[in-house]
Length: 218
Length: 221
Image (cartoon, rainbow over all chains, first blue to last red; front, side, top):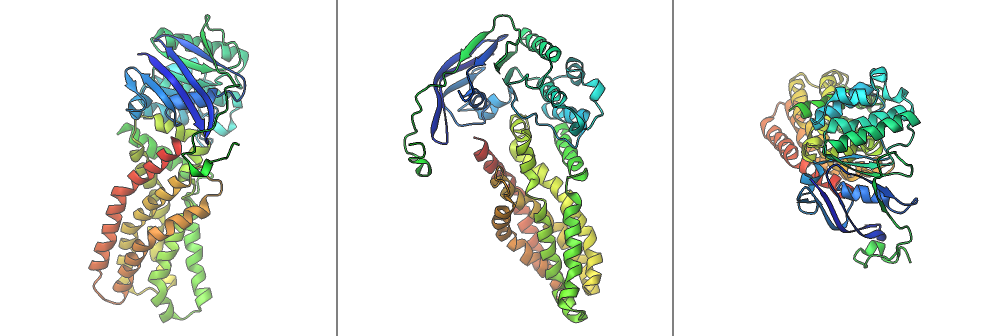
């Protein structure tokens, strides 16, 4: 199980966000994605998750994202800026739903790792931002997927939970999993490899294939 | 199967809890039909004549009311992103969501319609066909609406656009559904209109999940 990315480029509304990104994530490895605001970290993660169009090759476990979209998506767990939580449901109902849908990992393990037992019966709208984030991240564990794509996962987490989350990532990688993490802080992983996105990539515009966007950024 | 059941129970829970809007369609249906006698006047034979069309048009508009939240809520809180990564095919997911929409919006209308038939002086012979035609026709409304909801996902205040997109698609169901009830109240043969109504619904159930899923994918990729 390896993630191979070569010559990845992404455009959004005809504007180049980044280009020529080539890297590999080996099994058991957590790679940090660095770069200032607006350098394209979120875009890169969403493109790898198959949620945005891209140019280049993304191959996970021998399957190309361009050829078998679903085949790649079914190996990925993604945690973005939004926690994908329904405020009307309780914490337990939210997590149980994801666990039954993905049929992957163990709920009990996720509850222990993210200390959700004390807020299990609380409606999600009554939870604090940090508690919601814990619930959102617990979805990674119940999904049982090998590749975790994490976009600023530690936002609103306290110091103690952040440290615990680093341990959870280490445990995931020790079990043969992989993680690609966009973050600005030092998570405390053991000397992880870093990929840095350059915000000063030449902002060239796309060839005028889309008549609606011609001249939009000139 | 477990996943299907999980999505369905979640959809029903969300619709029935606060802010879900399950009662919205029913309340709208009741009020609009109750207003008709005030507007048209208490003329029993006139009310009996317009009853089939009125009940069907009111049901159609009531169905439309809660459609704009079908995918929009999931899009706004990031749930839609995660659902696309799930093992369940998007077509299946669309079908379950549309079915849940029918259970919480269409089915209550079917149950309430006979009571409203009385207020419009609907002839006795038409009640059975009013309930049957609504039960067979309203699923098509929820499923066709899913296409509009999928196309307008991500657009703020997309409800207006959704109505413009979806209402023309409702015309065949409206024609055959209202014709069923009218034929029954006039003592004519109901079966041809009913068969066409059922045909439209079956075609809709088969094709719309594919179309709506394609619209969602277009939005996501």
